[in-house]
Length: 400
Image (cartoon, rainbow, N blue to C red; front, side, top):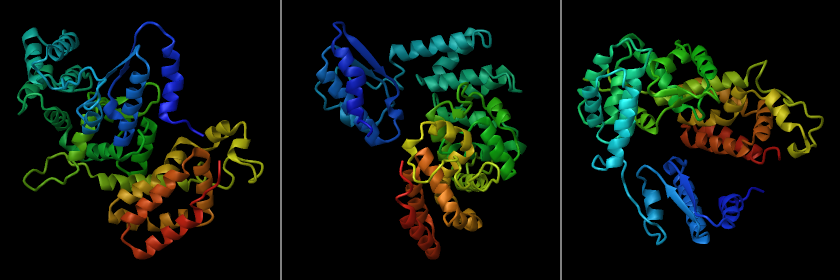
């Protein structure tokens, strides 16, 4: 049985440090990136107890402004200081850090006076400065440094990161705009960061065209391919927030506005998931991991991880875990188009093959939540009945 966060923290960190004589400082960076409010609250409560129980332990926490974090920390008597320095241009640390970064990054690109103008334009927002520097250092761009600099300086508001993102996307040739927005929508809709290979496979399946590698290269100032996992990731959460604000359709007076059709992207990913599930070579099948008997439980196999890695490919794992959530967030047109695919997966024998994969990858609970989300978002009463019936039949799944 999994230990609680508090128990794990005490066993792995607090207890070993308690026997040390010297002071220990723990740094927890970007605590606001914990997925949910309850998770952030639990982590902060655990850290607070650690400080109370160990006098030699001090904890330094950084975060973007967050109401949950502030509500937990503000009443604590043990806190030393609670400051908001994120956008404080008057704070010397912010100005000095940005100045050092800009001068070092653009030393051979821009003269000192222009570097200083960019520092002032950033208005204490480091992500603005770092994104601007990556734009100017991007070797894949066809624009001159002077042209990029002029556009950055002429942005409407000082330090507004949305203006920088808008400039980056506006540099894409108009004939590629729709394809680019579709690719960004797929990245935004994905529940796990895709690899370059994954995205290329999705683009080929959906007929969008384009290249994942070219996307990362052309938007290198805001996208990155992780060297270890090979996944495509957004460089900063502010880009995700900006793209979500672009999910509102453009008005006729502003047709060139960046538009991210997130519901269509969920539909496209749903279709790709079904393609993976139905693949004769690497899709769902009877006894996918080649177990000797169905009477054995997962824990009885010493080589289970090797079997899973060998038999359940990355695309099949993703599709098994997430297709219901993609369907739940797809538009009505996509749900109607994929209705037959959905019914095929949730009926025997595919339902049994699917549940077996879910059991192996620890995704039974995820699937149940996904089916419930589908029931909640599906308008057809008869279709809701089919989903509800299969949900009650298979809710227990195959044990681990």
